[in-house]
Image 1 (cartoon, protein in one colour):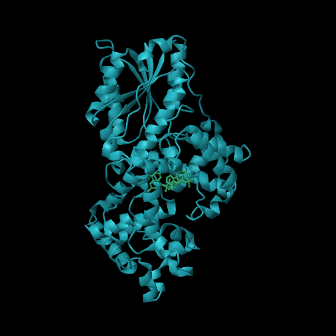
Image 2 (tube, helix red, strand yellow):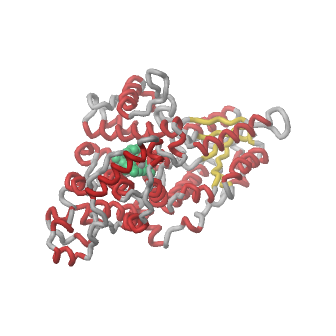
Image 3 (cartoon, helix red, strand yellow):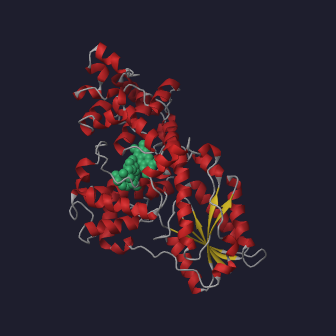
Length: 495
Ligand code: FAD
C-alpha cells in the first residue's frame, strides 16, 4: 500500500508542511512508499480568473518542489482534470488504480474546495470494506497559526472583529509559543521505493492554459525576476526584510515610494513559506520572545505581526462566513446597492488614466509588477466603487486577474465595501509626501514640481497643465463622494 500527499496551490513547499510531514511519518512507520501528486485543472485557473503571473508562479514552484522531492526519492506526479466536475473522479481513480491506502492534504477553506474534499471523504468511506477498496483521508490545518474556526467570542461564535481577535491571538501565542513550532520536511523514501514508483518520476510539469500565458518571453522573465520562485527565495526575502526594514516598518509601511514592506504576500498565499516559519524568524528578532504585542516588541515588529494576524482572521472569516467567497459582501446590505455601468470610468480606472495621480499610479503599478502597495489597494478600491459607483466585484475580479499574490480571503476582505471614501489627494500628500511614487509610475508628471503633482489640473495654470499630456479628472471627487453616500444610504435603507 502506498501513502499519498496531495499538494494544493496553497501549500507549495516541503518545509513545515503539516500534511506532507504526517504522510511521511506514516509512510516511514508502516514501511510504505510515499508518493506526491498535484491535480492540475486549467478550468480552475479560468474560474478563479488567476493571473498569468500567479499561474506561472504556481507552476514554477511545483517544478522546484518536484526536484527537491526527487532528491528524496519521492516522485511528484501531475494529474489533469479538465473541469471542476472531474476533480474528484480523477483523484479517486488515481488512488484506486495505484493501491493508495492513505491520502493526506491540507485544508483549503473556500466553499468549493471544502465541498470537493467532502466528496473525496464520501468516496473514501463509501467503499470501506467493500469493493472497490476504501482509503483513509487525513486533512490538516496548515495555512495559519490559529486554526480557522477556533477563535471564539465569549458567547461561542466565531470572532469577526479584528481588535478582539488580534488581542486574543497575541495572548494565545505568548502563552503557548509551541503553536509556532514547525515540522520537518519528508524523510527520504524507503530503499526500494524508487524502483516501485519508477513510473511516476519525470511526470511533466503542466503548462499554463493558453489565455494564462504571458504576453511574451520578455514579460515572463521580467516578472520572474521580480518574484523568484522557491522556498530559498522566500527565506532570503524574509531575512532581508527582517534585518533591513522591520525596524522602520511602523513609520514607513504606508509610504509606497519607500517600498518598505516585505513583498512576501505571493509566497504566503501560495504557501511557498509557512506563516510559522515566518514567525519563528520574527521571534529571533524579538530576543526569542513570543510576545508580539506593542508591550513586548518594538513598534515595527508588533506592527508587522499585526498584518499577519489580519491574514489569520480572514481565513477564519472565509470558513465561518462562506457567503463572502460566493460573490456576496460580508455586510449583505451592500448587495442592495444599485451600481453604475460606467464603462469609460472602469476602463480609465484599469488603464490608470482617470486624471487622479495617486490612483493612476497604483493602477499602473499593478499592471507592471502584478503587485500593488497596500495603501494603493485601499485607495483604488474605494475610488472604483465610491467615486465611480462601479460594482466592487469588477475590481475584485481584476485584482485576481492581475495580482501575483491573489488570495481569495485577503482579496475578498480587502474589497469589502464600506462607507469610508478615501480622498486620493490628501492620501497622496500624507503617504507619498514627496510625490516620488506618483512620478515613478506616471511619467507624464515627472516634470511637475512640488505639491502640484498631487492634483495637477487644479494646481497648475491651464497652459502648463495642457503641456503635460495628462488627462483632467474624469469625475469630481467631492460630488461623487456625496452621490455615493446618498446612494448607499437610500439603497440600503430597506435592506
Ligand atoms: P507586508 O506589509 O509585508 O505584510 C506581511 C504579510 O501580511 C503580507 O504578505 C500578507 O500576507 C499579510 N497582510 C498584509 N496586509 C494585509 C491585509 N490588509 N489583509 C490581510 N493580510 C495582510 N493580500 C494578499 O495577499 N492577496 C490579495 O489578493 C490581496 N488583495 C487585497 C485587495 C485589497 C482591496 C486590499 C485593500 C488589500 C489586499 N491584500 C491582499 C492585503 C495587502 O494589501 C497585501 O497583503 C500586501 O500589500 C502585500 O504586501 P507585503 O507582502 O509587502 O505586505
